[in-house]
Amino acid sequence: MKESVHFESSEEELCKFCPQILEFVQTNKITLLYGQMGAGKTALMRAICKELDCSSEVSSPTFSLINEYIPNNKKYTIHGIYHMDLYRLNSLDEALNIAIEDHLWSGKHCFIEWPQLILPLLQKGEFQEIFIETLENNQRSYTLKFAL
Image (cartoon, rainbow, N blue to C red; front, side, top):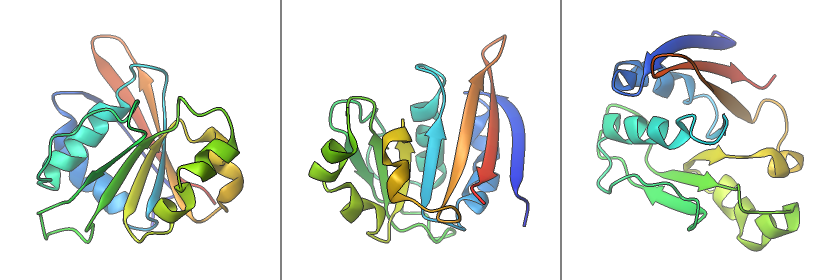
């Protein structure tokens, strides 16, 4: 098993990397997404959900905080997804008030944007991280790492 994977892609080409990304996130059900505002975290989720043939349209959970998607593609062992955006939360207590722990340990895959404030709830080895960096010419750099 690789400890990290790196690739560069435009948003339009991102789908061709989704099988590799989905293989990577099979290890742990919690994936932390890092990247500046507008880096493409929700675009990544849109590509993943397209590969998984999710029945509902992917949108940013900035205001809802948590969106749920149900995959229809049985090729993968992902049976449910929580896509979370914790940007608007100010404390760990606020995260606990939205039942973050129930979602984290639900058995569904959790993809979490702006996860910094919930790090105290997680232990190394329970999650992987995806770092997205904006490059020139509409390209993005994606680095997938296991938190060992």
